[in-house]
Image 1 (tube, rainbow, N blue to C red):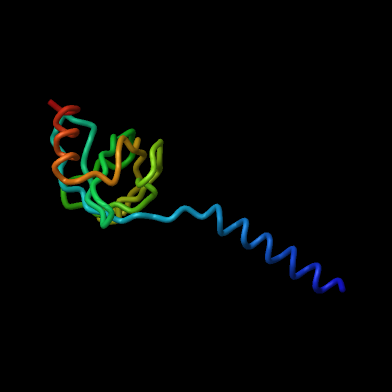
Image 2: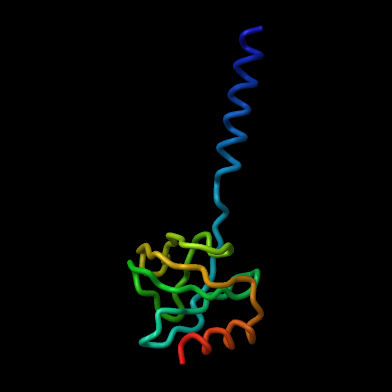
Length: 108
């Protein structure tokens, strides 16, 4: 009887832990102008507009990994530079044309 209860508790704990795991997106920085804290990342789900808040300063072509497909402040990883950065996810899952339009509204 004890082993059944222990298995149930362990299974429940594993389910709770897995539900807390954030799924990481991977994408490439496709647009970043000097003097602007915003940049665009292309993912397989569309385009995201991120605002840099410190850490690594990514460049066009860099590969970023992290949870930037939901709004808010995020810590993500620049795989190209082997460094972390903090970003604000301004928008995500945009079309390319909409992402570029919004980007230039912020950076011009």
